[in-house]
Length: 333
Image (cartoon, rainbow, N blue to C red; front, side, top):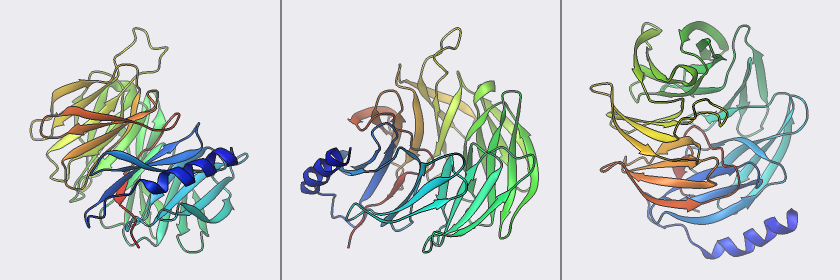
């Protein structure tokens, strides 16, 4: 496996990331391939592959795009936590923490990394990779998002019939309240003004809309089948939703991406992703394209937001699982 990783390092440096100041990269975690694929969002080409020693579970990118923080499951609840230089594609440090993570998110100032799994929330210093882990009673976390001002965490989780969103402060980490939502909530995203949170209620085939001032559900939006990932356009006008059901579902449902007009709360288009299990999803900062991670397709599909059509599908590694915002400024010296 190390030898295969060295081959990637030798080949991919000859493919250059765009040198434009606004260049962005999409970073895709490939669990079964044990690597990270980097895609240049201007050319929509795979530009590098970063080999890893263990299957990556979760990843977050620093706001300046220079560093990646990656969790690898080790044993029990412990996990290896890597800091990676994305320009040189090398591991800068490797440490072990007591609790793993389903998702990571870096604060806007780049100083803190938040990690969540089950009933634990960790706050980690990005320089020292040390921090504190807080156990929150009655909380189950699948994914989470940070408020724009960085003061609040909204964490989605729960069972098929009793989902909740836990609302927590970040300094110190403490549970403020819980909001009942639909079954098996997974994807979660917050608007740029912090006033609304959207939650993908997988078991109930709907999106819950939360009012953050009142900390309650203000409405729901139905979708055709189990929603998983969510991504908002920068102008807040459209919500993109990846949907797929477990292969044992009876009757089996189609894999697709739903496009929701948030002014009306109506699905305006459904894009077929048959047998690709679309999961992670993110919108480019300019709002022109949407990147959809196909977990069973071992690829990333790119949508044009002006037409809501697939313009290209890019092969990546095996079992890609990126969630949250995996698009960041391309690394430059």
